[in-house]
Every structure is written in C-alpha cells, then in structure tokens.
Length: 198
Length: 144
View 1 (cartoon, rainbow over the protein chains, first blue to last red):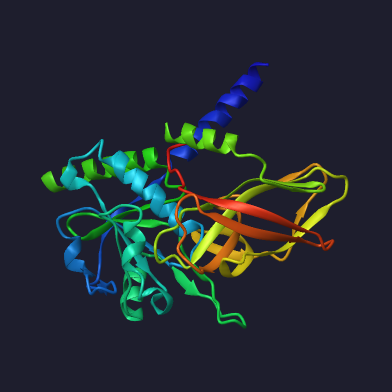
View 2 (view 1 turned 90 degrees about the vertical axis):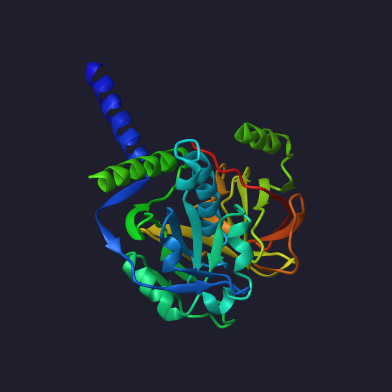
C-alpha cells in the first residue's frame, strides 16, 4: 500500500514538473540579422523595432484553422497575466509573421489585432522570412499543392522571445498555458535585468 | 469566471443534431480573426448504436471547401493532415477539438460574427448524412 502511495506521488510530481515547462531559456543570447517585414498598409516591422522592449514572435499563416488562432489567443491571455507581474513598459509585444505571403499579404494587418489591439501581423519577402526563421532556429515548409492549388503549411509551434537588446533569449512552447507562460516570462525578465546589472 | 460561463453556455446548448444512432453535441466554430481564410469546426459525435460508423466527409455551403483534418505536433512542428475516414465505434464518442481532429472550413463566403450559425452536412460511409448547425463562439483562453 505504501509503495502505491509512493508511486502516485512520484507520478504526480512527474506530471507536475512537465506541466511547468512552458519555455526554454537559451544558453547564450542569439544576435538576430537585420530584417524588414510589412503589412498591406505599409506599416513596417524591422529589427530596429526590437530594441527597447520585449517581443514575442510567432510564425504562422492565415489559412491555419486551429493552431495559429489558438496560440495567439493563449498569448493574449499570457500577456495579460504577465501584466500582473511586470511593469507596463516590460509587457511583451506580440508579432505574428506569416510565412505564406502569396496568400496572406493582402489581408495580414487585421489578423493579430483581432486578439489584442497592440498585436501586429506582418509578412514579407521570402529571403526576409527565411533569414529570421533560420536565425531563431524555427522551421516552416509549404507543402506541394493539391489539384485545386490548395497547399498546407507546416511551421514551428514554438514562439521566440526577444529581449530589449534585440537578442533571442528563449522559446515558449505549447500549450502556452497563460499563467505558466507569464511566470516564465517574468522570471526571464528578472534574470535579464540581473545580467545587465552585472 | 470566463471558463464557468463557457461551461454554462455549453451545458444549456441542446444536443443539436441526431440521426438514428448518431448524436452530435456542442457543434461550434471559434470566432476567427479578420483575414482568416480557414475556420475550424469542433464537436463531439457519439455512436449510440451497435454497428461501427465512419465519417467520410463533410460539406459546408458557406465555404469554398470543407475537409476533415487533424492537427498534430511532431518534434515542435505544427502539421495538419487530411483525414479520409474517422471511425466511431458502437458506444464511443469522438471529439473534434483544438490540437486534434477538426473540420477545416476554407474560404468563408462572408465574415462570420459571434452567434452566427454554420450549417454542416456530415457524410457517412453507409450513405447516410447528418445535418448539423454549428454556432460561432469566442474561444476562451485560460490557465488549466
């Protein structure tokens, strides 16, 4: 009987620990290349916009019925939760970058704003997308079209966390539980400030 | 609070469709962002009969096309796969939900507001069809 209790405790601890993993801090900051994206109204998002604030970058596409809207919805809730833990000027800005400009470029601006007025969504030239995807160790693939011309897009589910010095610091991972993600981001900011003060 | 409201909303929705031995519960389409070219439909389908049933297709008049899809995350990559058949064993329920099975609805003919109704026709291997009306609802995102 005692071993059963011990087993249940062990299992409980195991699942508890796994549930805490909502992000991974990188061993060393990654410097990002220069890049330029925009929306159909010519509003831009470039590497210069990374400086001075925290940024969360997600790659996706607008023909994504399930994963992309779910992730952005959870990020909205996570940023709201982060607001209870950090100063307002440390709230991360969420940026959605479509890897499917051929289908998305004409409608991109409204997409992320649906989840929060401060979220932005942009896309850009293939070389710009590829440069940032590679630099953030992300992935995407446009699948071969079917006979109607329709194609699927595979993409990394992780979200890149960029510090106010413009370097990649961490990856957020699904399921993006809002409370746990906020906790992870708040701790990341504390360790970032410690590093700066050293 | 939001979660309990959603739970309440779900609990007062009737089982919206039933045909013979098949019941479809809580058919919903998450309210989608502007510019979305694809919507998802979610529901739970239950086979109360004693013979296996297979969902083999779906049509949605409000969309250019509709597919049965499954989302999957493989080594950190989100993928989708078209499903040609979803089996529902006797006495079993299959739930279409985030991160798994969904009906992918491509190219809505018009933007859909919260509360809008989305007619779907589910097609089964035995030739039967089942009409379902999904409701557009705002998805709630809370900590579990």
